[in-house]
Image (cartoon, rainbow, N blue to C red):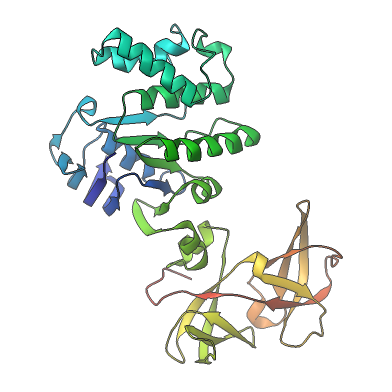
Length: 361
């Protein structure tokens, strides 16, 4: 396994900055996800690790070796990396075993060792009985396992995965997520995983680097990103957080918390800021509860929409009064549901105050 580091890396295409001043450390054996919407620069970062692109500025290292810098790039075949593509990139004229062993053949691995490793990798991904088949005879999930086996057969120090589950249906995606977890535990390899799907990143990664417009906004463990985002953009992208402007009114009895004024109602939220400061507070639908309109300590809201989701229903609400005219809130409800247009009370059980340098509210 190997570490990967970016030091103030930038890359532009035709004057457009795909990646801007990215510094990131990925530890040996770590599973890190690069998460963000299409066009945010995450695949460009992955391609620079692989050696398909080189940076216009900054440095990229795999372990202690400099592999990418302006005008300098170690060839991909000398980087000890494996790569799994969204499209699988399997050779249709080769058998499953032939695909898995092809890179070993190019490296002149002796035939007995090559056959042993191919068999080992196919057993590892649960396809030991399908080595003679061609890719077109396999399901999408099986093809992805072949691509994984091929990438791991050469024992790379770093495995790069570019949207590997994007072409699979929901059931197969869940199954393959479990496979990735198992494989990462079993093989001594660093995983760097690109995805636009936050649920994938949250389920798989040790840490997540959230990207937007070529910039890494925050790097943290999934739980930290969800509970304590450092910017409004991260809060909205992770878990569809709602960000509402508030004024800090007083210290709170709970350590590490303050009292804020939210639509005229006092609310205790996690975070710190001076009295009188204006910040954004992050709210999550599962921490908002719809109650009776006259319940004490709640915010009066009008129900504007109901979205049935099986065990729970997402309730969309608009706070009453001028301050709530342009603010939409969402709460998770179960059991008896309100009706659209009904006036209800909204109880807020948790909130997180964004730091001063959080981006636009």
